[in-house]
Image 1: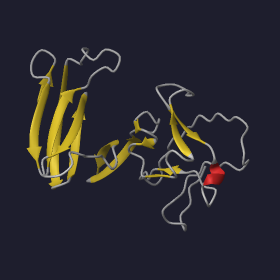
Image 2: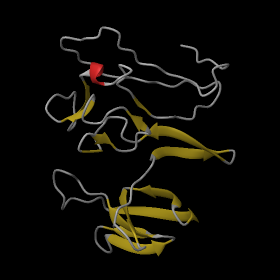
Image 3: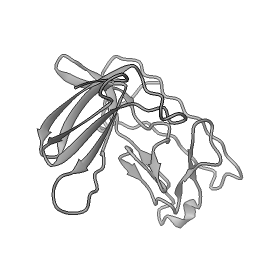
Image 4: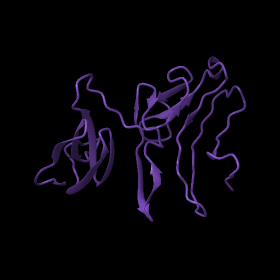
Length: 189
């Protein structure tokens, strides 16, 4: 589907178990400001699994089945296909901007939301929020983790950066880890 600022700015389709709405991407500070055009291709792989490719659009899902009108996205990546395989180039919400309460959307795992890990709209490097970790001792294993799997390609270079701010850091054993799914394979730095 193709959308334009001068013409149709939104379209909704039913696909599988969902109604999928595609809108031109809105500027958060000025919602009336939209790009001149945008496009999307939505492919249903199953009743609840989709591949969406697009440019300058925002996509929302709503179930069209009986029950609570709740839908969530398990993972959102930006990337490309190479040799018939999906290669993610950017994990969306890597900056902790998309959250609900203390839950960071699009992250696969988060320890103790609202107990040890929090969305903090007050202290941030930029944008609207940061991840705050505190009260680590409240987790029985002294964990406060958030993780997201990323598929990497061999013999490629990747840039990973983080901003960290601390205040009265305790316990004094924080770590930022990059792990492999297979302990027999390492990552070189």
